[in-house]
Image (tube, rainbow over all chains, first blue to last red; front, top):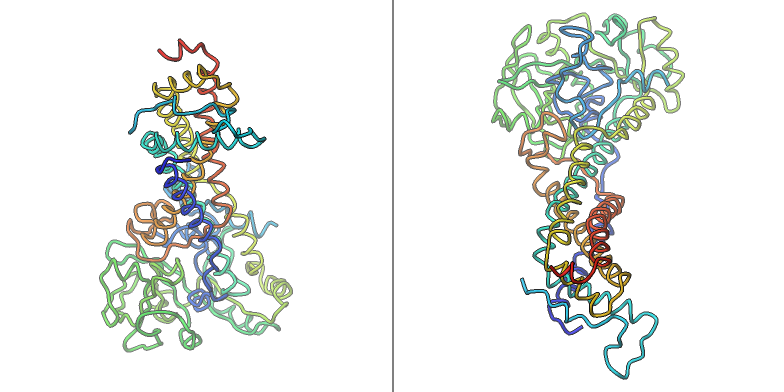
Length: 101
Length: 407
């Protein structure tokens, strides 16, 4: 292959793939097995929200086992909590998953 | 962009010099060389065509990595937390736990430590923050990473630890005063602010002594829940004894919470499922239209190759090699972009969509883990997009009459 652009292209592809492979071959960051904030407070959190602004269930589902917005102000209506189904993960009601195992 | 010159391609079955003997691999090698030369000549076209693909892949990789990171951090939180969580059942849901029952739980054999907690919500400026009231005197020797110091019980000048993002939003520094108001109002002194590397759920938390939380929420007879620490291996037995102390006591072991997190976090739902399908459809369509279907020079090039003596299989093989290169490059570029986006820019612009109540430009570290599954998933995704967008259109062009394809 005499085309210099092709040679540069092969080199670029090789470097890019090596950089990607190199990232995965790096040793993972040393993490202490204990999260001291969680150890200190007894454990809060778990769900993908940093504030209980809409419901405690969105943030710490072992304190509030389901979304309180489902019961108030009108029980039975579709839940208006904007976080439902819109975040990176969706947690099921706690009791159904853990207590009823 | 240099104009396509299909005549540059020698027939892949023809040896490169008269003395050469065509070996079993020389045909494939020639096709790979031809594919690379095609890519370098049409680099701009491929770049434009890959924009939709790279955008979709970057989003996909970011979401998968944040989801994995969140799961790992949640499991670490569970491991660091209490052995048993006790709540009081009211109308089938957890309610305030009577303080009068704490002594009964503490006296159970196997229980080494009992921590009552008040977990409430209060408005600070226009933010709703979580208030965690715990007995600070029992926990003052912990090695928490923070700016300032840990709060200590001080009835004359109540102290609090606040989360990094809340402190940033309220423009608070160590030593500043903060008024919290619920049923009562208390002026606190900020003694510590968590670091950006602290647990995600500390971002907007306010931690104070349980006695100040009692005054704030005016609830002297109840707490939110009780954290029990037990002897190793005694969790299940202690849970059974705890639940027998009163018919309203509900106890969850650390194992149950861990199972819940593991189960719940594997249900990846959300708005992104829809986005990915849309991105996939758009990427296939745009790739097909830009590179082959609507790109006349490429159609003519394929027709000329046919006229030169190439057969359909050889043309398709060359296109497959071309698109395999494009797929690997798109995967690598998307992965690098996703890593930069999450690690350096802390998922700016997308953070509140992934994790609720985070600001648009967070300064907290976003939990993300790029597992080896990420590039595998991304390569499969990009292979589907590029191959679907090219093979059929190439085959249609290669099997149609040369004169028609040249038009």
